[in-house]
Image (cartoon, rainbow, N blue to C red; front, side, top):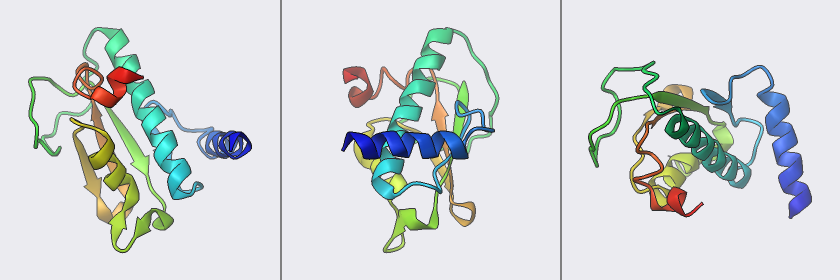
Length: 135
């Protein structure tokens, strides 16, 4: 429903009003479906921003990311995503599941004890993800 989506964004905006949402988003206030949708949108916006920059903004260089599908690139931005305990169902973080299922090439690292996901955003993020290319 449109009303629920608007309410979810208002809640998200309120909780994240003091955050630079191009670098950190807090999802603890949202249910799983809202959190998944907003995460996709925020990753896309961060990727579009990096793609438009046309230059490196190296802020994180430790090699901690999953490189199951390595490609030549370097880290230009890291988006940290704070999850809620409610996002963990049957011992599985549903935001992580969405990242695995909905993105072809997305490097991330999950800090389980903090429920924090670090997502690597670079100039190839949109190019290498068919879902984002279609947006």
